[in-house]
Amino acid sequence: MNHGLFTKTNYSNLFRFPRLLSWLLFFFGFISNGWGNNIQVSNLSLVDENRLESYVSIKFNLTWENSWRLSSGAANWDAAWIFVKYRIGTGEWQHANLHNSGHVTGTGTPSTLSVGLQDNSLAYNMSTNPGVGVYLYRSSASSGTFTTTDMKLRWNYGSDGINSGTNVDIKVFAVEMVYVPEGSFNVGGGTGTNAFTSTTINTAVANTAPSGTGSLGGQAGGYPTNQTPPDFPSWPNGYAAFYCMKYEISQQQYTDFLNTLTQDQANARKPASSSNRFGIMGSSVGSYTTSFPDVACNYLSWADGAAYADWAALRPMTELEYEKASRGNIAAVSGEYAWGASTIASNLYTLSGSGASNEGIATNYSTTAGNAAYTSTMSGGIDGPVRVGIFAANASNIARITAGASFWGIMELSGNVWERCVTLGNAQGKIFTGKLGDGQLATDGTANTALWPDGTANGSGFRGGSWEEASSTLRISDRTSATVTNTAREADFGFRAVRN
Image (cartoon, rainbow, N blue to C red; front, side, top):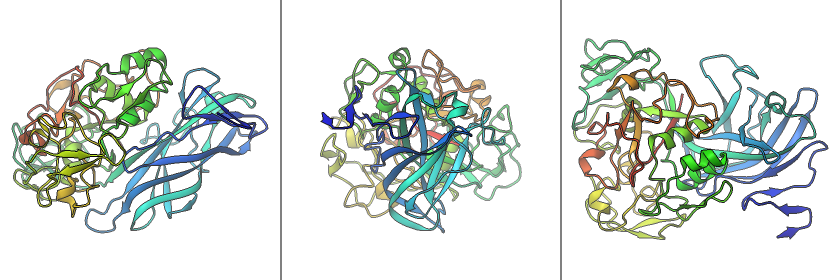
């Protein structure tokens, strides 16, 4: 392929521009093709260089479908978590340091931009606590396709040790997130094996002992009644606001992750399976592709999911955050699933457009009960996870229940692939502090963030069920496997990350 000044690189989705600035050559590519609701980054360029202060603006367009902001009811919004990777020459990909100001939201959907720091509890510092990404979301109540043109992020390339005249490759990533507001919520109030004793979590101080009567059931405190407290008051118990990935990690997202690692890291993080709709192929960094880009990524071990979270400057979620992300800030319903009711579809699904970006449920989509991928709808048929967001996209969808959506609009928290959570049920899980990933991995490809459950998976567990499990495991309060330590890669193991 040759278009005059454009020269094709060895990356199928990256193209080299001519000298756009007097000092810098760069590569670009939109990285987020088909990441659930079709979030896309395009028209990447570098502008507004300031050599004296060693920064430049990364300009691009961004769009995604089915965006919202609500001012009543759930009173929340969805957002794009946007971060940047770069490399010098053929060196290793690095996470870019962003400034805490000087960004531009662009023109289009009226929006607000918030900078995410490496440690949100501390003040911004260009060197020791930089911006590691930004959230972009609607600034007022509205819904529909979100589009912005000429958005700009200020990249402090000098703090990344880059000099003028250096050849640099750049990739911009965008992940759809959902804002879960601060506030009280119930844990354990629905039914489920080993469920927590019903408790109202009414404080962010996670080691506050439950007592009295909670407004949403049981006692009220920072952790569930009859449990031992976490070691630190900062254990993420769900009361404080957080962002949660709208969808489970898709295979395209995980492929893009693999393509920015070193070869040793990628070798450690790439599952070897080719069954149960796992389609990631390739043997070298830059060559990884998938035949199921929009399908939830399965065969992920705890170490795989934690590494992705660290790389994206996110973190694992706790099992209390899982319950709040599912149930919301309202009273529990007996036997409820993530869509807030105890009814669930029970007939075997068939697919239309299998593997395509518009993969859908062709037959047996319920118009009254909650739709989910689990044994009764999948066994002997599809034999693997389905496209993220598939149930909301059906033409017969009429509301939250049939879409299988959580109170906040988060998808597939019941079924499809297991949610991997930090557990309150053992000592290793109790030392978690919610420290965020910094965008970099250890040389062996593992997450290197302090006090996370490590590659042994001790301190992690499973919530929300999967396409291979019975309906009972899909219930919000079910803790059948909440404390199970498992290092394996299985056909129904996935991951979803959050951020303070």
